[in-house]
Image (cartoon, rainbow, N blue to C red; front, side, top):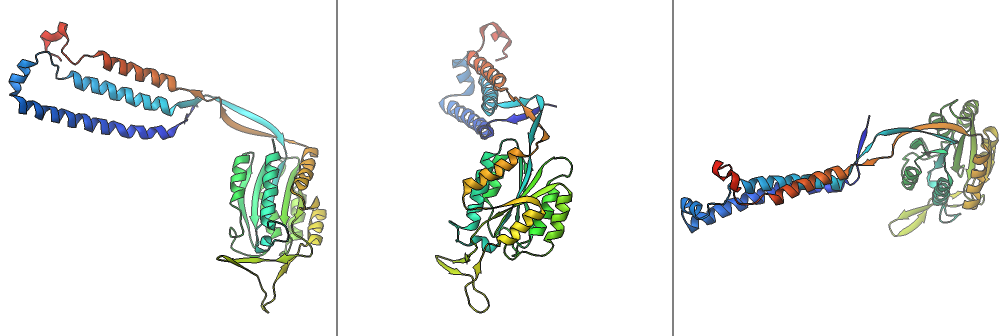
Length: 342
């Protein structure tokens, strides 16, 4: 079935002018009629203008409005995608789970842990060609951010909205993020399915080992990306124009540290690898190397291809009505004057 697409929908607003033109025409006719009556009697005026047609101005106006209507459609440019293509791609399925707990605001790496993580993921998306990517955010709970897709523009758009306020519950629910990744990655449909967990690994919750075991059983390779320094840093709290730091119950400044030991254990159990996000390009190159070396799966995606412009038909019809409108004279046509049609 053909699919219709309008290239320039903003020109539809031009259709608002049609009722405006109709109103102006009615107003103009009423004004001229009043002007005629003030000049002389209507029967006398008809005798003074015997060649004037009563109906032709209306016919000309109708043709002009029809021409204007089809001109707007030509500017909108309806397109028809009549050829349905099935595109086959080979690539790797990957899910990126980003920790958005408050500890990711620590500035022991610049500008802060979360911002640097997002910059790395954005750079990774730029490097992808045929691989599919999905996004998960998590803190005390895991939430889907973007279903697995090859729409890299959408991936970057959704990535921009990631911040520490997107998940209300605090914590580091790595196990829940791993379980959600299994919902993203369909078991058996891809030869290589990868999960990249970007986190500082602090304050992790229980249930990680069970989630890892289930994911590995389903053919998912779990990789961890550590962000932050082992010596740690305070967690800034913005209060208007001033900045304070998170404190414990005794009033001491809380220092959040990279738990690289935990992240290495997760990577080993998950059959993947662990890297520290010290250099963005270095981390991206490492991930892309593992992706390029992985066995690719074949994906099918259906889409309408080769949209064909249809504006020329509407433009031709518009010119036809405009030409007819110009060719119709305001006076009566001589050879049918005796029938008094116009």
